[in-house]
Amino acid sequence: MPNNDISIQDSSIGGKVVGRDDYSLTISTNYEQRSKYLEDLYEKVHKEINENEELRESCEDFDYLNSDRDVIGLEEKLKNGKRENLIDWAKEAKERFHKKLFKYSQLSLSAQQINAYILSNIKRTFIEEIYVLICNNTPQEQINTLITERIINPVKTELGINLFQYNDADIQGMIYFLTGNCHIKWSN
View 1: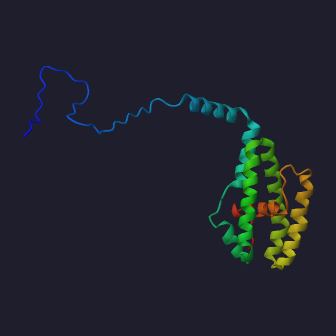
View 2: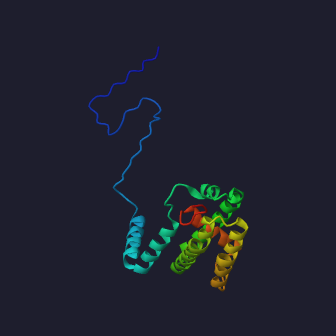
View 3: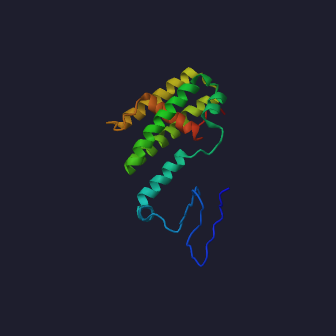
Protein backbone atom coordinates (compact mmCIF):
# COMPACT_ATOMS: atom_id res chain seq x y z
CA MET A 1 0.00 0.00 0.00
CA PRO A 2 1.49 3.39 -1.02
CA ASN A 3 2.27 5.92 1.68
CA ASN A 4 0.44 9.27 1.17
CA ASP A 5 1.93 11.01 4.19
CA ILE A 6 3.58 14.38 3.62
CA SER A 7 6.03 15.97 5.98
CA ILE A 8 7.12 19.60 5.77
CA GLN A 9 9.70 20.93 8.21
CA ASP A 10 11.32 24.33 8.67
CA SER A 11 9.54 25.76 5.60
CA SER A 12 7.44 28.76 4.87
CA ILE A 13 4.77 28.59 2.19
CA GLY A 14 2.85 31.68 1.07
CA GLY A 15 -0.47 30.28 -0.04
CA LYS A 16 -2.19 26.96 0.26
CA VAL A 17 -0.61 23.58 0.26
CA VAL A 18 -2.29 21.11 -2.08
CA GLY A 19 -1.39 17.44 -2.40
CA ARG A 20 -3.09 16.97 -5.81
CA ASP A 21 -5.12 19.08 -8.28
CA ASP A 22 -6.51 22.31 -6.87
CA TYR A 23 -10.05 23.04 -8.10
CA SER A 24 -10.75 25.90 -5.75
CA LEU A 25 -11.77 29.28 -7.11
CA THR A 26 -10.73 32.56 -5.57
CA ILE A 27 -12.74 35.64 -6.41
CA SER A 28 -11.28 38.92 -5.40
CA THR A 29 -13.68 41.83 -5.21
CA ASN A 30 -12.41 45.31 -4.85
CA TYR A 31 -15.42 47.59 -4.84
CA GLU A 32 -13.32 50.53 -3.80
CA GLN A 33 -11.97 50.86 -7.35
CA ARG A 34 -14.76 52.32 -9.45
CA SER A 35 -14.55 53.01 -13.13
CA LYS A 36 -13.03 56.42 -13.74
CA TYR A 37 -14.96 56.50 -17.01
CA LEU A 38 -18.33 56.25 -15.26
CA GLU A 39 -17.26 58.63 -12.55
CA ASP A 40 -16.36 61.22 -15.20
CA LEU A 41 -19.69 60.69 -16.99
CA TYR A 42 -21.65 61.00 -13.73
CA GLU A 43 -19.89 64.27 -13.04
CA LYS A 44 -20.67 65.49 -16.56
CA VAL A 45 -24.37 64.57 -16.24
CA HIS A 46 -24.58 66.29 -12.85
CA LYS A 47 -22.98 69.41 -14.33
CA GLU A 48 -25.30 69.39 -17.37
CA ILE A 49 -28.39 69.02 -15.18
CA ASN A 50 -27.35 71.81 -12.83
CA GLU A 51 -26.21 74.22 -15.53
CA ASN A 52 -28.98 73.76 -18.08
CA GLU A 53 -32.13 75.27 -16.58
CA GLU A 54 -33.97 75.04 -19.90
CA LEU A 55 -33.33 71.28 -20.14
CA ARG A 56 -34.37 70.72 -16.52
CA GLU A 57 -37.66 72.62 -16.99
CA SER A 58 -38.39 70.80 -20.23
CA CYS A 59 -37.71 67.44 -18.61
CA GLU A 60 -40.05 68.33 -15.74
CA ASP A 61 -42.84 69.22 -18.21
CA PHE A 62 -42.17 66.07 -20.14
CA ASP A 63 -42.07 63.89 -17.01
CA TYR A 64 -45.45 65.26 -15.96
CA LEU A 65 -47.02 64.14 -19.24
CA ASN A 66 -45.22 60.80 -19.09
CA SER A 67 -46.14 59.99 -15.49
CA ASP A 68 -48.52 57.19 -14.66
CA ARG A 69 -50.51 58.78 -11.85
CA ASP A 70 -53.20 56.14 -11.59
CA VAL A 71 -53.01 52.37 -11.75
CA ILE A 72 -56.18 51.87 -13.80
CA GLY A 73 -54.43 51.89 -17.21
CA LEU A 74 -55.47 52.29 -20.82
CA GLU A 75 -57.37 49.04 -21.21
CA GLU A 76 -59.55 49.57 -18.14
CA LYS A 77 -60.30 53.18 -19.09
CA LEU A 78 -61.46 52.13 -22.53
CA LYS A 79 -63.62 49.40 -20.99
CA ASN A 80 -65.13 51.96 -18.60
CA GLY A 81 -65.89 54.16 -21.61
CA LYS A 82 -67.54 51.25 -23.43
CA ARG A 83 -64.82 51.23 -26.09
CA GLU A 84 -63.61 47.66 -25.72
CA ASN A 85 -63.52 47.33 -29.51
CA LEU A 86 -60.64 49.83 -29.58
CA ILE A 87 -58.38 48.18 -27.00
CA ASP A 88 -56.05 46.32 -29.38
CA TRP A 89 -55.82 49.26 -31.77
CA ALA A 90 -55.31 51.71 -28.91
CA LYS A 91 -52.49 49.66 -27.40
CA GLU A 92 -50.79 49.36 -30.77
CA ALA A 93 -51.17 53.08 -31.58
CA LYS A 94 -49.97 54.08 -28.10
CA GLU A 95 -46.90 51.84 -28.41
CA ARG A 96 -46.07 53.12 -31.88
CA PHE A 97 -46.30 56.73 -30.74
CA HIS A 98 -44.34 56.01 -27.55
CA LYS A 99 -41.45 54.55 -29.59
CA LYS A 100 -41.31 57.67 -31.77
CA LEU A 101 -41.61 59.90 -28.72
CA PHE A 102 -38.74 58.12 -27.00
CA LYS A 103 -36.57 58.17 -30.11
CA TYR A 104 -36.89 61.87 -30.83
CA SER A 105 -37.00 63.08 -27.25
CA GLN A 106 -33.69 61.43 -26.47
CA LEU A 107 -32.02 63.31 -29.28
CA SER A 108 -33.15 66.87 -28.73
CA LEU A 109 -34.39 69.29 -26.12
CA SER A 110 -36.44 70.99 -28.83
CA ALA A 111 -38.05 67.65 -29.71
CA GLN A 112 -39.07 67.27 -26.06
CA GLN A 113 -40.58 70.74 -26.10
CA ILE A 114 -42.48 70.09 -29.33
CA ASN A 115 -43.90 66.82 -28.03
CA ALA A 116 -44.83 68.32 -24.65
CA TYR A 117 -46.58 71.19 -26.47
CA ILE A 118 -48.55 68.85 -28.74
CA LEU A 119 -49.51 66.51 -25.91
CA SER A 120 -50.59 69.42 -23.72
CA ASN A 121 -52.79 70.80 -26.50
CA ILE A 122 -54.35 67.39 -27.12
CA LYS A 123 -55.06 67.02 -23.40
CA ARG A 124 -56.63 70.47 -23.18
CA THR A 125 -58.80 69.96 -26.26
CA PHE A 126 -59.90 66.52 -25.16
CA ILE A 127 -60.87 67.68 -21.67
CA GLU A 128 -62.59 70.88 -22.79
CA GLU A 129 -64.37 69.62 -25.90
CA ILE A 130 -64.51 65.83 -26.04
CA TYR A 131 -64.82 64.76 -22.41
CA VAL A 132 -67.81 67.06 -21.90
CA LEU A 133 -69.63 65.22 -24.68
CA ILE A 134 -68.63 61.83 -23.28
CA CYS A 135 -70.13 62.86 -19.93
CA ASN A 136 -73.35 63.87 -21.78
CA ASN A 137 -73.56 60.40 -23.40
CA THR A 138 -72.96 61.67 -26.93
CA PRO A 139 -72.88 58.74 -29.41
CA GLN A 140 -69.42 57.31 -30.10
CA GLU A 141 -69.62 58.07 -33.81
CA GLN A 142 -69.99 61.78 -33.05
CA ILE A 143 -67.14 61.60 -30.52
CA ASN A 144 -64.92 59.93 -33.13
CA THR A 145 -65.77 62.58 -35.72
CA LEU A 146 -65.07 65.34 -33.24
CA ILE A 147 -61.71 63.77 -32.28
CA THR A 148 -60.75 63.86 -35.96
CA GLU A 149 -61.99 67.44 -36.48
CA ARG A 150 -60.83 68.99 -33.19
CA ILE A 151 -57.65 67.02 -32.42
CA ILE A 152 -56.18 64.98 -35.28
CA ASN A 153 -56.60 67.48 -38.14
CA PRO A 154 -55.49 70.53 -36.11
CA VAL A 155 -52.41 68.68 -34.82
CA LYS A 156 -51.47 67.67 -38.38
CA THR A 157 -51.85 71.30 -39.46
CA GLU A 158 -49.84 72.57 -36.50
CA LEU A 159 -47.04 70.09 -37.17
CA GLY A 160 -46.30 71.86 -40.47
CA ILE A 161 -43.32 70.12 -42.06
CA ASN A 162 -43.91 67.22 -39.64
CA LEU A 163 -40.26 66.42 -38.95
CA PHE A 164 -41.29 63.48 -36.75
CA GLN A 165 -43.53 62.08 -39.52
CA TYR A 166 -46.53 61.76 -37.20
CA ASN A 167 -49.57 60.42 -39.05
CA ASP A 168 -53.22 60.05 -37.99
CA ALA A 169 -52.47 56.79 -36.15
CA ASP A 170 -49.61 58.41 -34.24
CA ILE A 171 -51.84 61.30 -33.19
CA GLN A 172 -54.45 58.82 -32.00
CA GLY A 173 -51.57 57.09 -30.22
CA MET A 174 -50.95 60.39 -28.43
CA ILE A 175 -54.53 60.35 -27.17
CA TYR A 176 -54.13 56.78 -25.92
CA PHE A 177 -50.73 57.63 -24.45
CA LEU A 178 -52.39 60.40 -22.44
CA THR A 179 -55.22 58.01 -21.53
CA GLY A 180 -52.80 55.36 -20.28
CA ASN A 181 -50.91 57.95 -18.26
CA CYS A 182 -54.11 59.18 -16.61
CA HIS A 183 -54.36 62.60 -18.18
CA ILE A 184 -57.64 61.93 -19.97
CA LYS A 185 -60.48 59.47 -19.45
CA TRP A 186 -63.35 58.06 -21.47
CA SER A 187 -66.08 57.85 -18.83
CA ASN A 188 -67.43 60.04 -16.05
